[in-house]
Amino acid sequence: MEVAREQAGNARGGQHDRRQLWLLAMLLAALALAMLVALGMGAVRVPLRALVESATGFRPLSGDQRVILFAIRLPRIIAAVLIGSGLSVSGLLFQGLFRNPLADPYVIGSSGGALLGAAVGVFLLPAVSVAGFGTTALLAFAGAMGSILLVYWLASVDGRTPVVALLLAGFAVSTMLSYSSYFLETLDQDFGAGMHILSAWLHGTVTQPTWPQLAIVAAMVAVGLAGSAPLARRLNTLALGEEYATHLGVSVQQTRIAVIAIGSILTAAAVALGGLISFTGLIIPHILRMILGPDHVRLLPATALAGALFLLVADTAARTVIAPSELPVGVLTAFIGGPFFLYLLRKARREVTL
Amino acid sequence: MTPLLEFVRVGFGYGNGSLFDDFDAKIFASDCIALVGPNGVGKTTLLRLAAGSLAPDLGEVRLKHKTLVSLRQREIAKSIAFVPQNVEIPFPFTVEQFVEQGRTPFLRLFGGLSAADRTAVERAMELTDTWSLRSRVFNQLSGGERQRVKIALGLAQQPQLLLLDEPMQQLDIGRQFEMIDLIGSLRREGITILAAMHDLTLIEGVFSSVWLLSPDGETLQGPPAQVLQPEILERAFHCPPRHRPMLVKRARSRMEKAI
Image (cartoon, rainbow over all chains, first blue to last red; front, side, top):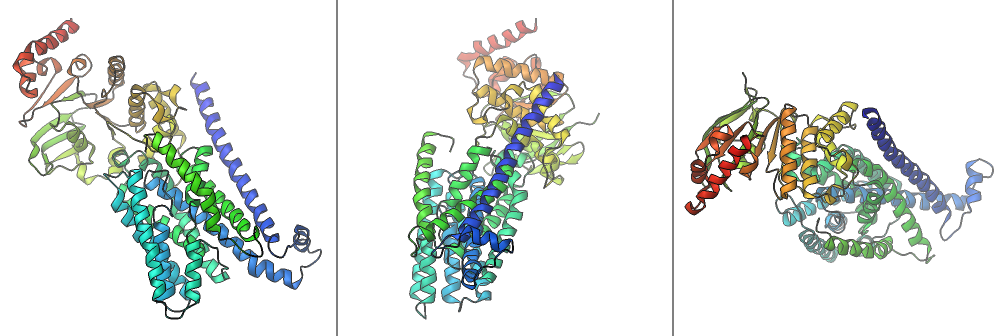
């Protein structure tokens, strides 16, 4: 009996692990394929065959093709991947932190805070040079961190954050911050550049990034992902509530601050490149939770990959469906994520667990 | 003999007046103690002081001679498990995932459960008869099942002392009997227990001693037969005199059970 039980236990654990590994492998393959396809898509089509032929050294690409691929499309693709990962993982972290599956960096105002921070960088500090972008990203981080602390303080009651309080606080803070960004716009000395950037941010457009900008954001996302890894299991324990977590030896306050900091780094990285892209951080962790269950340790790598895949597909669609014109990707994610969010809200109302 | 846990002249209050003054008590290994008293007298507070999540204003709580204040909560959690009254989880964790949380104080920053951790989890679920529930979603369990699973989480910590906060709360009479049987079987396993209890009728025969807390700060400690007397209970619980026959009946039913 003992043995049978042990075997059953191992088999079950094995099944879970295998399912997770399969999913990760599939997501990775899908992401690689999507990047390849996205390289070929756009106003100028570069056939997949040309890509393969150049990669195998069979026939080199033409000069135009090379510029389009490596100076325009590849940075854009990497940007989408980084933004998607950043938003999704910060969504996962915030959902764990607020013990609320409806949290998302956009909904709770963290994106808005990052945007205001970034806008300060653009309007009040001169020239968006490389160093300037670093400052912008840093200010975005400060903004994200400040706003989430504010929302957390406003919405939490005895360590819990009721849905309604969280959504209202998030909405209010988010609105104030976004309009503050408009206010900054009026202070702008030289019209044009800053306004253009702000407008792109508010619509949630992945602007054409430079390689140095990408490097900064990639470093932020890397730090964010690495920092999330040890936090994932603590979020599981935190899900049992403050009292349980404390009695199990988790320092609740320390964990919360760490989650807020790491989540803000990821949000800031995403916002600095793509502005306000809504609901991505909500949908991705949610769908994966349906497949893998609520264990944050298991969810983390899958969320990072799936988020990257989702936003890459969305952004590629955004820049191709009405080519040569472009749709802000934020519009697309709002179309997909908005109804999904409402559905969850409706469901949450029926289930008292929230 | 060294006590496992010792309250030494503990004083504690939440600002407006004190709940405990000069509270002294000892818990020895294999004790099974029922903590009783009227609502608001500080039963849960006493359990939290025992678990180290509240620090006494005066005096100290010692775990084998070491004062709890000097220990990290994580270290305490390796010796003392606290099973709270209520738990609300916003995510659909399975019973097994829930019980695995009991290994939290033993895990490193990275890496999952070891074989020893798994064994502890399985043993805990065996003792509480919750193994068959392992794939169910915790939030969908009945009240009685939840209580047993919560105790399984506590046992997964392989504690020297198990603190139970009103384990009978909101259970129907059948589940109450199941719970008292479980406490009895844990006692036979040699697990040391301090449990806040609401219903006095189920204490006899299972618990080795009773701590009765009164609103006036007086504490009575002794074997159940000695503490659970009508006159004593009447005073501690401020029972209206017309209900005295009921208390006598309860005391008598206890004596009959003893026979």
